[in-house]
Image 1: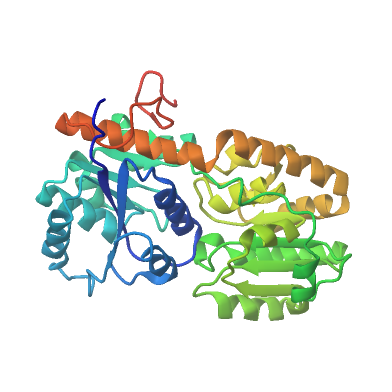
Image 2 (image 1 turned 180 degrees about the horizontal axis):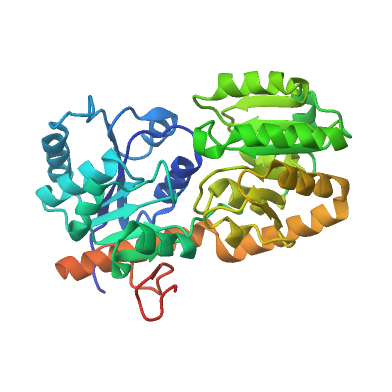
Length: 397
């Protein structure tokens, strides 16, 4: 009997772990890595945040490494951590400080595998000059959709042979259709007959909630009893609440803040809306699709891969409030069409964007890179990879 190879020790680098799409995705990835083959850890350069505190009950979580922007002592601190924990591979999540310091410290500490995962085509994942300079020490740059992979090659300038696409994944068991949401209607004071449209996104500039409120105002002119739910928190909350008042729609808009019952809330939505300026492959859309909820979204990033026009939802140009509102009104007024689009969305996400597929992609990539770099076997047994190199002959073109 062949002895089992040691677990591959993987450290994920991020800034902090507030409640957000990319952070929830990372939590799901860490929790689903095969514990027989992988030993994940998390490093937050700053505070842990709510999701970091949650993960600290399950895996080693390290935090408070950087005290100010010019804190150069972060580098020896991180090197010491990587050596003491005997890390085999790192994955930096997002651009900025963690992408720079994480990779530099890993190279200095002699970590065999160095990867960077990016989740957007703009802020907060804009890759600056210093981070591009570290490309030679990076084994893989992970994009979340085929168009995102192309963007990383053609616009950011990463070598195609280093760009690997691993699509985001959603837990289709947790995010599943629920028939009865009457308890939420009672809790939120929503009449049984009132249609509901909502957005699940941190209240940050790139999500463009201002446009969502403009869309809400236009929809209310056609369907006056519609209720709009804004799920998420962030620095723009006070500004957005003021805008809702200025638009005269405050009574129809509920700011729900951070919630732990996202699957139930998505089932309450008749239409999921996303009004972002920039995106790659947003998790909130995949989660809505998994609950059989159709989406109306701006056509940015890789959104058109999941929101297929007229099949799983509708798209409109970024910033076009009238077009977005017209699609929302159409879906709210046509329940049979809404159901058909929702059913197609559920089927598509289960086929292409399951959590199992995403986790398998990371396991395969890290295992392959470690073996290539060291000649040793750790991690999961060899399997057909889910992710594909953009530059590979049979990869995603």
